[in-house]
Image (cartoon, rainbow, N blue to C red; front, side, top):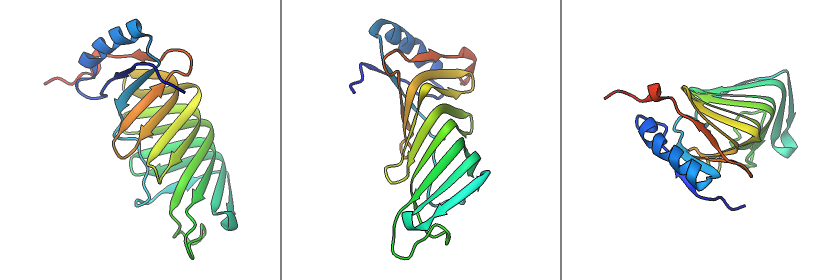
Amino acid sequence: MSVNPAVFLRISASLVIAGLGALMIVSSASAQATSSRMRGLQLSNDKPIQIESDKLEIKDPESKAIFTGNVKVVQGTTTLQAGSMTVFYKTESGATVTSGNADIDRIEVTNKVFLSSGAQQATGDSGLVNMTEQTIVLKGEKVVLSEGNNVFVGCQLNVQMDTGEAQLEACGGRVQIQLDPQSRKQN
């Protein structure tokens, strides 16, 4: 799938200044994607993680754990919520899901996904967190990314966790951006 001209924004102190110019570019270029910085949205293999759900099914031979019903994951300042979550572990010699010594390869989430870290939040229908590639992909009919009163709407959000780069795609339509002038930090 090709993406037409992207509008590059930074969700930071210069958001509103850059955003006004970006809004003019979006409306005149029929942009189908927008890029931004999302430093907060990340998970890691090296910090404690707390997971709650209504049910857990562990499949050690398949190196996966399936959490269903009101799934909530908290790691540091990052929270992930979904209806279901499947965690796939790297298959290393002697490492098992139940022993707690297996590294996470990827996490698949479905059924009303909510991801937040600090002031940044994103929602969608399904998502994939790839720990090896350090990426998050959130998809849905309406994917909403927000920081404070600044709101971005599309149908697929791609986040590179190690750099904080994010891209929001419109998938056939146009991305929608609402910027709040009050969000600009005063110097």
